[in-house]
Length: 127
Image (tube, rainbow, N blue to C red; front, top):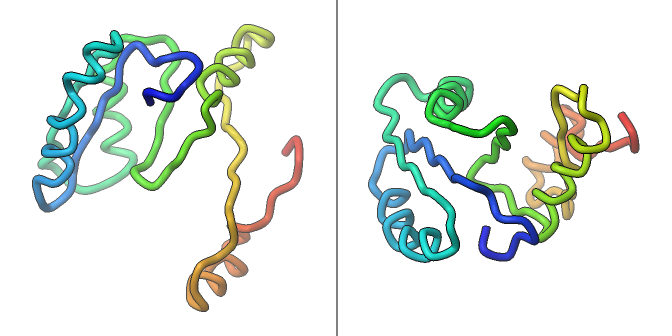
């Protein structure tokens, strides 16, 4: 997040992993984020593992009007937050936005097969 052209006001990490790796990573970055003016909230989810449950926990803990959901394997372009905010400024009645997904190809034969079956590598502009 430190390379974003517009910084988020808060970052909420909902961790439902089986180990403490995420917590250790968060603790390493906590001070840097604080110095950048970004509030960091770490929430350990010990209930059922589910991205929907994790997102609901994050929503409940958030203070913002605009919430961006990211998974742990997402890499953002430097202007991602800026572009998302531009959409909301230009279209005030908008209720949801998704950024472009740039996939650099499928990585293994199995992943390639899954890409084809689930259309993960298919993208059509403006849809």
